[in-house]
Image (cartoon, rainbow, N blue to C red; front, side):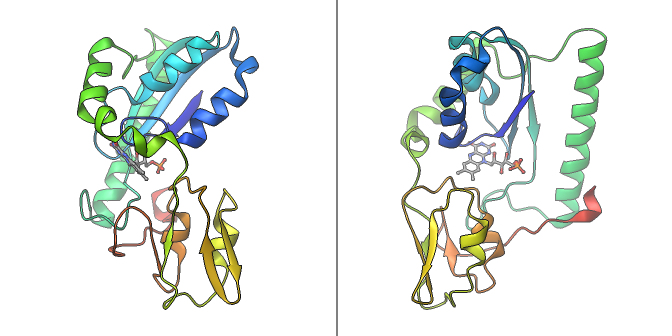
Length: 207
Ligand SMILES: Cc1cc2nc3c(=O)[nH]c(=O)nc-3n(C[C@H](O)[C@H](O)[C@H](O)COP(=O)(O)O)c2cc1C
C-alpha cells in the first residue's frame, strides 16, 4: 500500500522522487494507492499509478480519501475542529469499507479511469504543473517575528531551514508539508499564502 497527499492534482515532488529513486523495487509488485486530499484531485491516485506501471508494478486499486486540509495560510476550505474530526471519522470509515471490499468483492479503483485523468488534467494539473515540478524556494520567514528558537529547523524533513545568527533562514528544497508553519510559536512562517490564518495542531481526541 502506498499513500500520499495530493498537491494540485499531482504527486508532491518528494513522492515522485521516492518512486523514481527506488524504481527497481516496483517491478512485479502489486500496489494499492491511497491519495489523501482536501477537496478534489481528479486522478490523484492515477498519477502515481502511471509511474508505478512504468516501472513494472501492477496496480491493484486506488482510494481517494478526504482529510482536513493543512494549508493554514489560505482562507479556502477552513473548517471548525469538530468538522475536521468528522472528516477524519469518515476517512477511517472509508478505509475500513475499502479493506472489506478488497477482501470480498474487489478493491475500489478510484482515480484510475481515463475520466479521472481528464478531470485532474483540466481541473488543475495543466494550470499548476509548475508548482510540483521542483521543490519550492520556501518557506517565507519573517525576520522581524523570528526569535531563532530552532523548532522549524528540527521539524523540517528536508533539512531546508537553518538558524544562523539567531534567525531562521530557508533554502530551496521545501516540500510544503506545513510542519514549520504549524509549529512556529511566533507565527513567523508562511508558505503558499501571505498570512497565518490557523495553525493546525495534532489532536489526539480524533484517534
Ligand atoms: C501544496 C499543497 C497543494 C494541495 N493541493 C490539493 C489539491 O489539488 N486538491 C486537494 O483536494 N487537496 C490539496 N491539498 C490538500 C492536501 O491534499 C491535504 O492537506 C492532504 O491530503 C491532507 O492529508 P494528510 O493529513 O495526510 O497530509 C494540497 C495541499 C498542499 C500543501
